[in-house]
Image 1 (cartoon, one colour):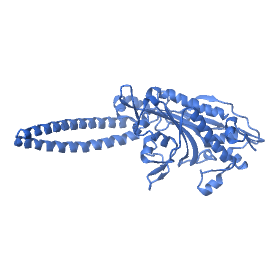
Image 2 (cartoon, helix red, strand yellow):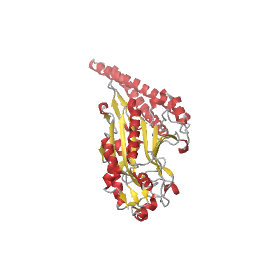
Image 3 (spheres, helix red, strand yellow):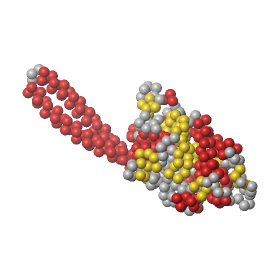
Image 4 (cartoon, helix red, strand yellow):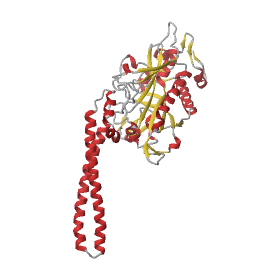
Length: 423
């Protein structure tokens, strides 16, 4: 959530920045500034009346001690009126604060200056590319056929048990999943990330803190009787570890990682692009989360991007890195880089990771702060990245590494699987 102080100080910058997302925020910013002015004026009146009330209380006490009861009682009538005024102003202030909060929730994060304007993924910028796209043999197949031929994934069994989008991994498929989770976690720990095993369900405060709530797109699975939500990503519980905390600046950067299953309704998803592992309701993902001060967050973002690139290099997968345009970036993000691996059998790019800097957008909701060198509390910057989302990585591994004699396993992963080829 944007800070009202920032809107007050640089309204035009925010309006122009949000235009990159295709959002016209001019009326909302105008309304917020008007409410903010009213709110501050009322608060000033309250403080004046409270100061007068406090002064009268002291004067009344002095008058009673001096035996001037009549004068004291006369002043008590004024204090009664002041208390009623303060109560009325407090109610008015509360109403304005609720209006302000509701409006603030409608504004997405302001894109970083490096983000270009754009409507959708077609306007994203490719910033780098690595690896060679493999030339497959004549009878090469997409991963859903390979999964069936090699008995790795049973999509129909998943439909029987739960429905579409809930695959069942079998034999070497299950072992590959477990191997990738351990590989990613070990690599992350080696890069200085503390490992967590967080809950898979969160309360509304946690969903609000990282920006998944209000759920404008209806993507979260909700359990109303319990007031809980199934997590769409480990970002939610891991980042909320630090909700309502004043962290030690000496610990920056605070780096966390964790594995969880992820649950997404993926409302409106259909067609060939969602076949097989391309889009699921339940999938496994290893996440990295970082917290730091504003002066170092973009250097840390570059470090996270380099780390994820290193994971894909070790998996011997061709990939490209995209800087998302304003219209394709997430609601909470100031700057996002997407990693896409090339699926040789499908002849298309598949997103496997997003790495984002949220600046203070999440920490303002989370009340996540640190003390600067002057001892004043400041909002932290939060960042996160998928390191990695398993389904499309597995799809690319199966498709790109298939041979007429079997599916080869990259050396770095074979140390975890216990086999280097699936025959």
